[in-house]
Length: 175
Image (cartoon, rainbow, N blue to C red; front, top):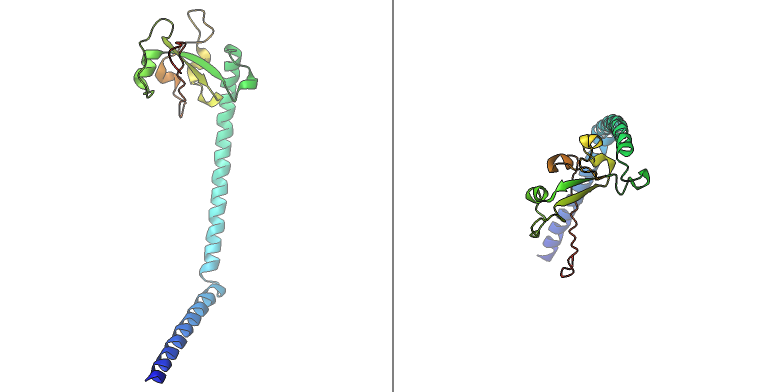
């Protein structure tokens, strides 16, 4: 009875490994015969060329946009000398906004005090020349302030996100 079990297990193992070797041979045979692998290789090369063409097209488009923005940014720097070009990656421009309008459009996460004469505006600092709105270079301050005033929707038209910093001169607060 034991020798019969041994023979059945031995035949099962032989069949398993024979099937495994046959399967490996069939897969290797089809790839060496110039089947799927060569075709896949050609498709991969074609896709790589298409990706390179798309990247080239996108780079050209970005360069054209940057040139157009560069012209705008040059006029911004000449019209509103709030920041030198050496701080362009930190601060490229700044506008004043109505604080109540800003608070009604953006949830700051904390309740704000009533607006008064000394805290009725928000300073919006543009970190990058790409975030500056189109009409910025045409702005002029009517009240003699070197920082122009702007409405909230127009001021954030090119902003992907905002970092809000709350400050207070009140010594009772830890802001």
